[in-house]
Amino acid sequence: MPVVSVQDVARYDGQEVTLRGWLYNLRESGKLLFPIFRDGTGTIQGVVSQKDQPAAFEALRGLTQESSIIVSGKIHADPRAPGGFEIQIRAVEVVRRVPDETPYPIQLKEHGVDFLLDQRHLWIRTPRQAAILRIRAEAIRAAREYMDSQGYILTDAPIFTPAACEGTTTLFEVQYFDDEKAYLTQSGQLYVEATAMALGKVYTFGPTFRAEKSKTRRHLTEFWMLEPEAAYAHLEDIMVLAEGLVSHVVQSVLKSRARELETVGRDCSKLASVIPPFPRITYDEAVRILQEQGKSVKWGDDFGGDEETVLSSTYDRPVMVHRYPTAIKAFYMQPDAERPELALGFDVLAPEGYGEIIGGGERIADYDLLVKRLREHNLPEKAFSWYLDLRRYGGVPHAGFGLGLERTVAWICGTEHIREVIPFPRMIYRVYP
Ligand code: 4AD
Ligand code: MG
Image 1 (cartoon, rainbow, N blue to C red):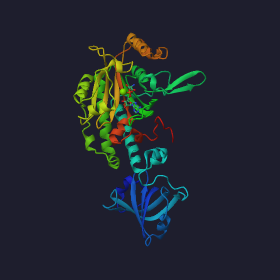
Image 2: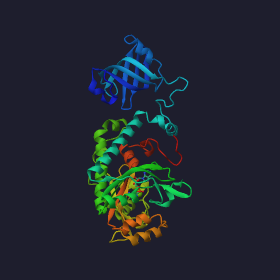
Image 3: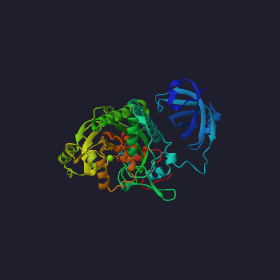
Image 4: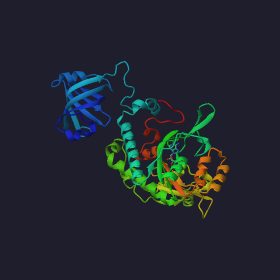
């Protein structure tokens, strides 16, 4: 008898199969039992009657939620069954019964989110959470596929670093052996700038860390970032790459994870339009739009979540805002030659209030200007000595960006908070489990 996954049962209509998984739910109705199994790829309802299959019936009767079981039976197309198929059970093997004294803590009712986060190691078993993690995996696969297809070479950046990349206020400090301090990386950017000078077009994809005191639905202290960097690239080049990457990820999820998007209740029509070109507006225009909408921003302010939501709300796909004031951007941003008070940087703002999913731009290529900026930002020149070497030894214009994976996946899934789209979220008040 073939051992099959729940996601593949449609191919076995009318056939006897074996499913291996867990008891997700059990409805008892007199002489009939209706168990729901899950195996990680989906859920399927089973049916077993006391009269026809007494042994299987007894094995399942009173079985506790999340007991592990192997069942065999006939797959049967039934339009009334959730998912369109059910399994008519003939045999049951209970692998491990959950003891009655320690019932599974997550019941099929509404629980508070703090409780669920404490049970995150179990919460990920529920169909919605499992679907989100499958979508995340597809987003990662598609993102790497796109970068590889564009000739970018994966060069991993270190996690222990000697200096800040994105401001000194969100650094996690670690004692690095006896008398050295190191920091968990905030971004792999500085290192991919080095590998870009070595290999041309590169990217890094890994966890990054920010000691963010923010408790917003968009902030984690540990999140994943995909960061491309290209030698001889300018702002416009990298914006084209960004829109191509985002659309490829969205379209791949739509194509390969339609079932999961349905499980999470996503309105997919809102994602179908995510194809290049994305609208582009300057920071100047963005300020004007916000003022027209009655927001109290003035030129020179950075945008918060509210402003981003207003800016993105008029478009059916992400909007790219470019040329922000130099003063509110990171030390490495190349100034616009025509208006040096502007940085050649850009953000990609996702629709539906999901905010900034990408930040990036063109980097300073000039040695002297970079030294000046390090000093203005009070950054330790010694720790950046290697980074200055990249300008000393054949500096060239180059550009890149960082795509925040969790914000991107949260938008694709339509989840309220980004904590749901990473297997084990790390936030200001949470490092457990
Ligand atoms: O805009 P950020 O800070 O840019 C950088 O780190 C650049 N060094 C990247 C580069 O040019 N290579 O962060 C990039 C993206 C943001 O747009 C956002 O999507 C995500 O990383 N991000 C966060 N995601 C979750 N939680 C946080 N605390 C985040 N901070 C940034
Ligand atoms: Mg940013």
